Image (cartoon, rainbow, N blue to C red; front, top):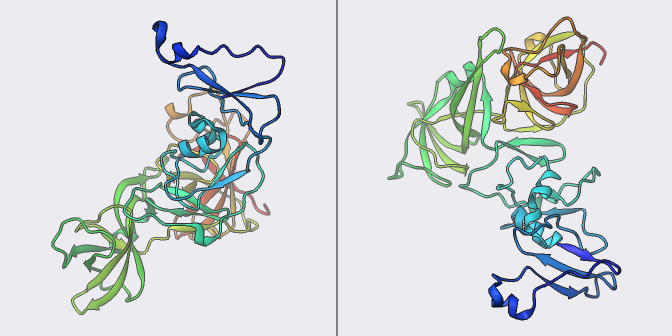
Length: 375
């Protein structure tokens, strides 16, 4: 779409008979109309068909809203058409919203920026969100400006996976179980399930090993939803009801506690100098950017606390291809360069979950991290 201003050459348009296909014309190239009452006086607005030279999606009004709250059925294509009068503007709209990791998946209640402006965006009221069930979700997406919610993947340590229960049966006469179905879960008597409590359902999909020592750190797991325990029998079998389902569940899937919501916390001063390594990311990516969750190889036993900050540092020639190297980039001939900062949101015994709060460059699995006393 473009705008015609007085003094510009008048757009050359096909005649009516050519628009109808006469004289060998295949169809219209565009249409022209005078601007309405809401447009600047004297402008002509013309729309190109898909494939035309103009794909910039010019806005014909003086100003549009800063943000759009997603409603049920919205797509980036629809939003681009509504605000920019050009559905083919959606790639640029997607670029304005780095929190949307997959342009095909946006959800009711999400906030979509309509420009590149960096002003803070208020969260929509809770009632605006309409959770969609039985559909594939993103690995992690912002719930509000203060945290992240894991929808499809998580991380468990080896002990957690060993102690998890398993779905062993159901009264339902079907293989695939979904929301409101009931299932039977066997559990470790040393780690009993509690009536009224909610637990995540998942399966391990990728073993995580330390990029330097090759020691097993844990597993990335695929999350299928959540169940609530209704009753427990003496034979270590619990009856549960599926209350949230991102994908159909089956017998054999694991059931256990798994933290899925991480709030951004206030920074806390580091008590000591500490170094470590980024060992995994909870999104299926090798490169790590702002607002992504990562796993660090330092935890409570190392003195890590909620709110501690780690700096991602590198020493070496930045021209070297990062993905072709094994292990962290640490050439001692070069000075340390800080490329990102990670805020700890959940320390565990041997590892910690952190969120990347700032990144000058993409971090990656294997990068060195440093906590500095007093920072």
